[in-house]
Image 1 (cartoon, rainbow, N blue to C red):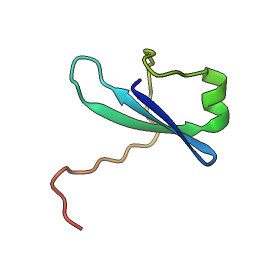
Image 2: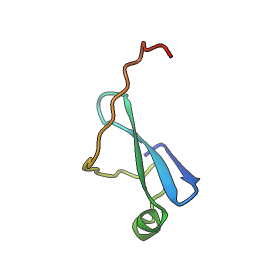
Image 3: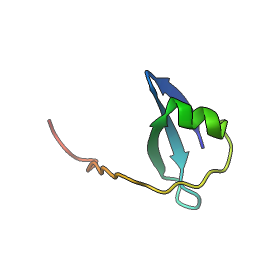
Image 4: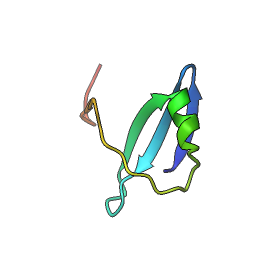
Amino acid sequence: MRHIQSVGPAVRIELLVRGTGKTVEAELSRDGAERLALSPGETVYARPRRIQTFVEDYQI
C-alpha cells in the first residue's frame, strides 16, 4: 500500500501491484478503514467488488 487519503465518508487507497510496478486505486468506508487499521507500506490483499477501467489515451 502506497498512499491513504480520507475523502469525506470514504477512504481512498493506492495499492502497488506486486511484481508489476502498476498501481490500483481502491475505496472503502471510513469505518472499514478504521477497523483494518491500515498504514502505508503495509502488505494487503484485496478482492474487487466493482471495477472501473480507464484507458490511458482518452480525450475529453
